[in-house]
Each structure stands twice: as structure tokens, then as C-alpha cells.
Amino acid sequence: MIRPGKTKMSVKIYTKTGDEGNTGLFGGIRTSKDDARVEAYGTVDELNAAIGLVRCEPLDDDIATILETVQNALFSVGADLATPGTSDERRGKSRVTRLPDSVVLAVETAIDYFDAQLKPLTTFVLPGGCILASRLHWARVVCRRAERRVVTLVAAAADSGSNDVNPVVVRYLNRLSDLLFVLARYANMRAGLEDVPWTAV
Image (cartoon, helix red, strand yellow):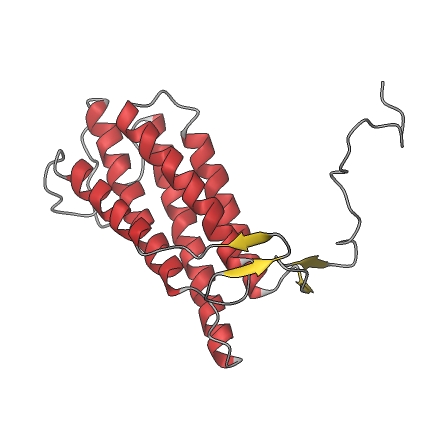
């Protein structure tokens, strides 16, 4: 049993610096925990966790590879959003590298690869199917919410005259939600399940 104050960890998990409802951005600037910037990168973190849950399922190698790449990219998205500014900046000994346009192209390439193996989509489809597809659909809607939170942040930054949000982030999240949709359809196809078309009520 570890007694209070006797932990062997060199760095404590809790810092108590956020007990008053504020948090530190990368570089030391402090802001409210309900700030639009914190909402944005917090929702990206939630998305990353949702994809981590997807990766608990047995996956084909091609899906496993792209999702691992996505999780790493999302960590970079979070760091980008947590650092006001649009250029590469040094914070202490760490350099924050802004998300590059190449990640958007990589997602588009993946979309084209998986979509080419699916039947053409002629109607809206219901989220669901196999467990893997359902988890991918859940990650997709979290991704859409993350995109909305970033758009809110962009508007807030524009209103303040800073315009300090990397525009690549919005494009990346937009394409990523499309990829997650295609992967959900692909997962159902591999499971031998047809898309369930939406029927108006």
C-alpha cells in the first residue's frame, strides 16, 4: 500500500494548478477551462480516445495502420490548438510544429483507397452494423463535433483580431470525418453486412 506523500513517482499526476477552473496553454499562458481553445483541443482528445476504442477491435492491417497514423496526427492537432499562433514556435526547449497540408492529402489518399472497394453510395445510411463499424461511426460524430469546436475557435480568434488558428486543422478534421465514415462502411462490407439505407418516417 502506498501511503499519501510516499509515492515513488518523480512527477505527480496532479498539480493543483487547475483547482480554480483555469489551465495552462503550451507556453505558460493561462486561460479558463471553458475557453473555446480548451474546448477545441479537449474534443480532439476525446476523438483520439474514441479511435483508441476502435483499435481495441480486431482490425485488418490496412485499417490498423491508418488509425495509428491518425492517432499520432491528432496528438499533433491538440498541441497545435493548445499553442496560440500560426507559425512554428519554440516554447522553452520544445518546438511546436504546425500541422502540415500533407496530412490532409494523406487522409484523402486513404479515403480514395477504401472507397474504391465499396459499392457506390446512392442514399444516406444509418450508423451501425457490426461493432467495429458502430465504433467508427461514433468516432466520426465526435470528429464532427471537434471540427465544430475548432470552427468556433476560429471565429473567436477572428473576432479578437488574432486569426491565430492553423487553417489546416479544420481541413484535416473535415476529411478525417469522411475517412471514418468510409471505414465504417468498409468494416461492414468486410463483415458481410450491407449498408442500412435511411428511410424517411
